[in-house]
Length: 478
Image (cartoon, rainbow, N blue to C red; front, side, top):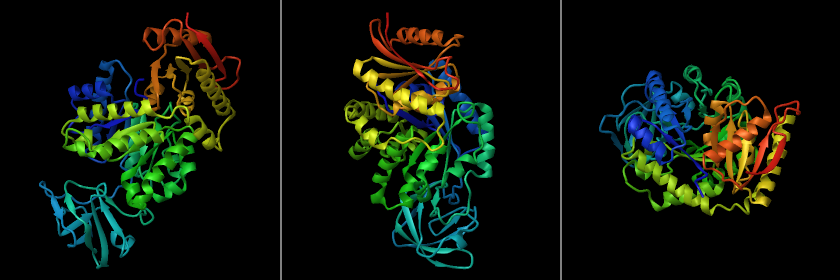
């Protein structure tokens, strides 16, 4: 069985040359993530166009996800060699954008002294350094180092989300978003979402006319407003770094499972992210615990797994992708395909705002999954304008291949993030029946199915007045 769980890899200084990008695609990268928190917009756009060029030469769809910075609070630049914060030592936290040291850390949040309370814990980076405020002065905070470590660059400073006055998306987010929408980006990740209103404020056209919006769940408020956020989004990311700082660490694994389950119930792809293979920043192989973490994220039902620093600045980005691909593929083989439908039946809900078209497609994809299972079909072929049909059938985690066909290039690239889906661009045929024939012929030509195989085909008919997938047929390929 080929790997079904998708891999998102962050591209950065260690991986943005064409040779490395091509090798990462060959190793199993399905989606490229571009983080916009560092560097200039011009450099990010240049990197984006380079990725598009390499993907075109690879002759396979590769999605591009841009990750907006959001209201990210950062420390001032640490020395080039870094600075070590020692357990038990005191330091000052001062609002500003000047350079930081092990004695004074500047924080680019003007309301720091007002909004942070004595007793609050502030976390740097992905949790490696934690300080606790013990006093306030006229111009800053006094803190003691609870968990020390080395800081370099401009690490993020996690302030409890209920203290922050900043809104999502920020004006800078929207400026960067406009540039990437014009460039034709496929997916956009929105940071520090607190409610469905934050997602709606993005204001882009619904996908696939616009990018698919990925809501990052990394605040306590997002967990409390989870269903509304999922319904307003195209996909969801479990951003475990800041979420782990917001919530008790012992709760994080359970929150991960809950978020993934709710996403699947509502038919949204879900990404598990942060520190998946972090030791591979330097090491040639992951720890045993990291390998287990990746496998368990697959067992939980993750649609995609994300690599961050491992591929952006790590010593061997290609090896990191290849290693995650091997672990995920092995976990896919052991996935509980038989027991999954029973779990799903307990979770299934219909979005409050779902249309009649979506309800019809939802019912037809369930019928397709059942028919494919009972006939031992080799593949489920989906003809989809928006990708909704493919994402809907993927909820059931069928053992049959999911082949997603669309005449919309952006839909095809957006499907690179959907569990189990192999997306194909389908040339316009002029008729629904012609599209079905063409998709079957293309599946055979690509080696996905063989003559004599049974396949389930989901498509829309011209007789239905809406945009629903309303036709299911079981076809033996002649």
